[in-house]
Image 1 (cartoon, rainbow, N blue to C red):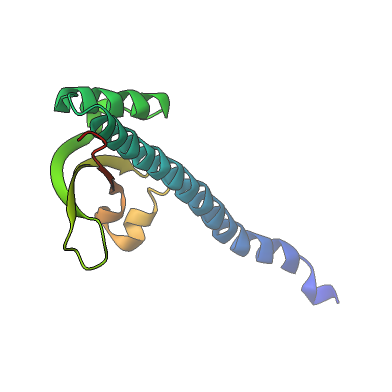
Image 2: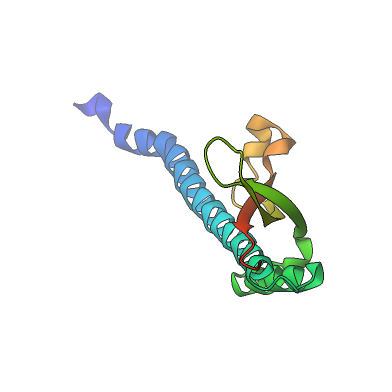
Length: 141
């Protein structure tokens, strides 16, 4: 029994960095998922504006997307927003098409908590570009 003194402390010292790493990974991926949801919703809001108000310009859509990103706590100046007119197949065979609008939002997200992962996985892990696309059929005839 006497030779096992301090074993718990050594086990704790070995397992604590692993537990802290897992905890920071969970938190950082949670933040990443929240940012992705904001980017996805911003793309949907932009597509909704362009589809419902056909007279709205690309600048109007970009302003709506930027406002949504800002309300979501993101820096809208980092985002790239593209607005495209597309043909959307209405039935599975694809013979009937309707006009629609697609909004693509790209946002670079910098991992902050997991900077130590660059040591293990390389520097490409530090920044992830979140890309969300939303397509809606034009409501105007």
